[in-house]
View (cartoon, rainbow, N blue to C red):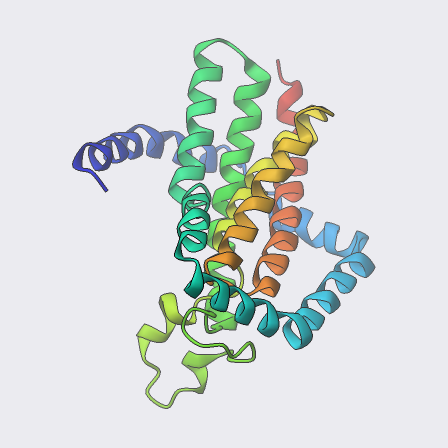
Length: 249
């Protein structure tokens, strides 16, 4: 990363950090666990179906899809380069930075609703990122870029050495953090505005990020499917927990 971009990033963090801590202090996460439990209870059959589909993809779809992508990428390197650029849009820092910029602009121009939705989106994306880290630790799945074995789970726990490196990139596949972060960020905007013109565009963004993660062999297809489910649940739960704030002014 160019030095000037690194400097901008540091400045952004210095500006954003006090605001984000303020949102935590104001209770933007306080009711989220309860909402998540409520949503699981209310939609348990749909969520169960989603989990079953993930298992079906692990069993039948993941390996042939990743094998085909690897073979195609080796013949056409530009394929990987193209999707790798799309991947960058789903990086947690990019997502949070973009939504924080929306918040700052909305506050500057006194658009209270947009500013509030952006704050909810920020906290949703961050909640998704933290949840993702926990799930990655639990599943500890090998990435397809490392080895084409879709059933290679729990590498850290299965290892006699318990090598901490097994918790890093190579065995950090399920779920996709990029997909969770973006999905959790866009859901509050979709729910708040219900705009028929912009909703498809908002849905397209996490879809492209998810596909890019598969096409670059950073994730199996089942990883991004599970991440999408988690991202939707988190996005809806954080939004419902803070929806009342939109009516304060």
